[in-house]
Amino acid sequence: MVPSSAFLVLSAVLFTTGALGVLIRRNALIVFMSVELMLNSVNLAFVTFARQHLSIEGQVAVFFVLVVAAVEVVVGLALIVDIFKTRETTNIDDVDFLRG
Amino acid sequence: MEWVIFVPAATLAVAGGVALVAARQPVHSAIALLVVLVALAVMYLVLAAQFIAALQVIIYAGAIVVLFLFVIMLLQAGTPEGPVNKLPRQRVAALVFGALYLAILLSAALAAAGAFAPPPERFGTAQRVGEALFTTYLLPFELAGVILLVGVVAAVVLGRRTGAGEGER
Image (tube, rainbow over all chains, first blue to last red; front, side, top):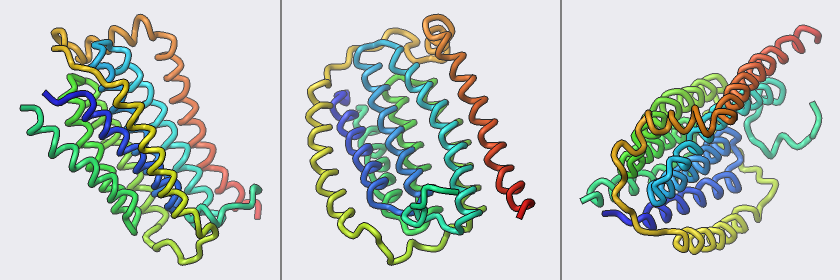
């Protein structure tokens, strides 16, 4: 039987990896995928705690995270495409004007 | 016995996560993201969350990664990041604070860890999750529908705006 701590350690490692990706990478698409990695690691923690406490609420929370993540990806990618059309770049350091 | 499944899946997930962050080209990151998502779906099966595992494969691996791949194709963002770095010390600072953050997160996670009791019958099936969604969590469920609608409208508006703007120029 794998203990819950193993899943939680994996979740923590994945979350930190995603956070480092957000902080270090400058390509908007890779930053965005790192955010998805962080969301997924949180989902793993939710499912682990749902299993540990035998309550279905943790899995319901994962469902809502999935929905919000889907919407976030759609809007975020539309924004990235929009920025690329006007600025010809996906480097987030080049987008620091705070105007259209 | 579950270790036989856990260890390869966890290795794949961590390797995929590192590859996602370290990849030169966004398309390699997308493939690494796919590996992480499938490995986590296996984890969900081990944790008696069959419905969530199916959702993970259908929504994340099926829809979100494909969307990423389409945008990568559309932007032709294969060009590597330039050598210009406006924040030279950010990488070092990120690694230091990332290590600190991992230590805090691990101590918190291990404090919350506990033993697994055998799950009740049909725990984590679509029926159990659906019952909770349509009774206790009905209002959040309906609001999730509204959020999805907002996403659809936002994508249409953002997609059309540049076209209109180019027409005005």
